[in-house]
Amino acid sequence: MRELYVWYHVDARNEDAARSAVESMQRALERTFSGLRARLLIRRDAERQTWMETFARTRGTGGADDGIDTGIEAAIATAAAALRPLLAGDRHVEAFEVVGRAP
Image (cartoon, rainbow, N blue to C red; front, side, top):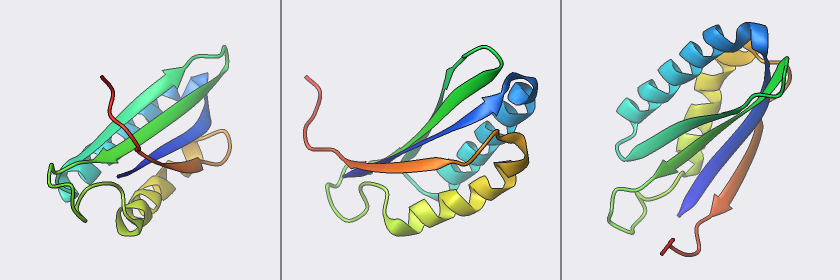
């Protein structure tokens, strides 16, 4: 199962608008792709914050519908393009394979 981790910086002055836009984007993606879970994490570092979005998808079948495939990753990138004016730099996308389960 493949998960995405996307990090970027946001200036504190853009926090409210960026948070609203990110959460709206994530909810729309969750409605589009069944089983998708999106989260937003924020590390507040004074004036410039580091934000991380996580995307995971499990429908419980253990089959091809589990995880973030290239089609969902492309849809996330397309949706995130609208965020660009609110960010203080580029979005950095990392993909990881889940190899075990937490106890």
